[in-house]
Length: 436
Image (tube, rainbow, N blue to C red; front, side, top):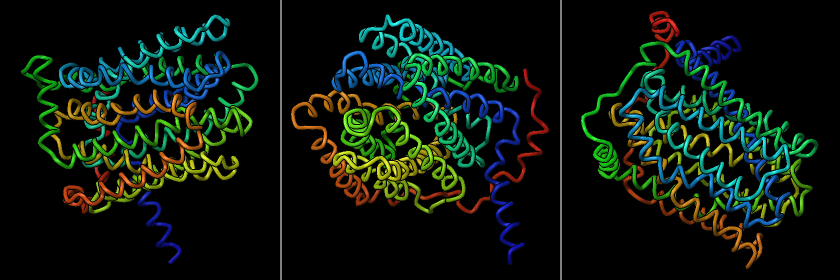
């Protein structure tokens, strides 16, 4: 029996790791692992840099908002670019833009010359890079991993982000508390160069791949919007994410560091909570790789309820040792939710439309978040952070349960649930074109 369990575990591990046998995906994965380490440093560093400059949660909300505005404004353009030009080229450009923006931010912080308006301006530039990168990445993963290994590939990327976040948040808290925020942002800037190097090393066939397109830019965007509008399950998903990001996620992002700074001891406490979130995300990646629910949309929405304890406990505020496990539940739900959503999108939409349709999904997920971020600071000033966070937890539960009652949610099934992915990964890897 013990031998059977061991062999079964090994087969599951091989299946989960199958996409890494493909050279192109392996290079992409390594680059994104490095980038994810830096990405986990910057939000914490910027949050406490703003609090050091002004001490205002409203100003913190403005800076966080500035990272989202260009993504909202340009994500549809990024999706059209990702379906019109070689995706690797679009992503390389985005990495260079983000390197320059974060690099200059780090210099300003290290030299003590940063002002609120400069941080906002540079985050707008960095957000522009993200608006180009993210939709193209959805399509590139399809090209690298293949549809039969998409869920495993998406889960591996999530595991990587969560695992690197554990180390990065610990390092970030220590850096902010000792030498300041600038060094953490500088590390993030350098990781965009690492990502660019691995993108450059992708196989030639992928590097020069140009998705088929016939229409102009605006027509391409419209085609992606129509593709989403024609699928009720997809736009219902978008509405749910938009509302819950506004009422639950945004208040935690803005008011969480403020609560930590006022009541929990500052950056080390928020870093510990972030590590708990990352640990939960790591577990979520494992669950996402191995679990294929028959009804993925309903399963993802049910998991979303695990987000509620975090804002509820921040409202108290509870001690860090209670908030860290609550953050773990939030991290678990986020990764499982995202893996199921992204995989369902990639499997059900034509490959030549996936970047554009994915950009519509991203836009919907982000469009209401800036409103929540912009309102969180003023509402906290008027009502108190505890009241805002408690309301966000309650409304999250209400909206999610209401969405689960919609029939279209339950009609989405996993048509590939009986397939065993990854069995031919090594053979396909051997046939790959050598790297550039």
